[in-house]
Length: 245
Image: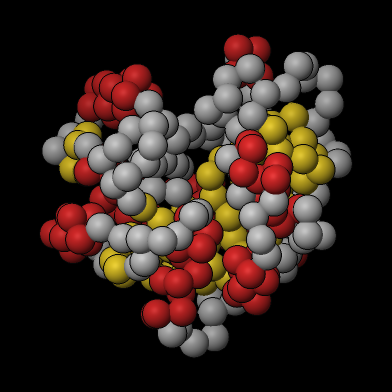
């Protein structure tokens, strides 16, 4: 069985919605909801990587574990690598980077990615789901991934590109979910590359990997979870999850 650790980058100073990790849904913070989902997937140990003591206190209060990292990081990828180094874990084969603003992530999709990673041993693996609404093609908060072949539940194709806006669905375009599984040595290489022009322009860290020749394989998720980027996203998801409960 592959030895995996799940690391969740989180910070209070997000530009579009400051303080969002500690916004509450059903009385629990967004970040602690994500930690709970990660633990329920039962893939490996779960840690939050953060520059904020308030987040550490909240995660600890809710039964999670967190590591204090530098406040100088430009990306979440850099943050989780510092966290991984501080933890000094042995024999880890994959690091799963789970975004801290996706409390609606489905634990079965986490397991799907982990299973494909165990079988195929990619440099980087990620998840994507079908796009069902045409309006999502132009929604810049919903990142799209284009793959070399159609994704099924039985294959693990290569990503050709990632975009925030696309014009049509005539090619293999999917909704990219904010989760990655890295080999530790690949993550180390990635954070030592300079940020690329496209990465900065599009606010997509995965472009740094692709532009340096690192392949990203994509598994098909059954559920189309969406991160919280705006107050409207938060209120809509809060309403949905509180209705479910």
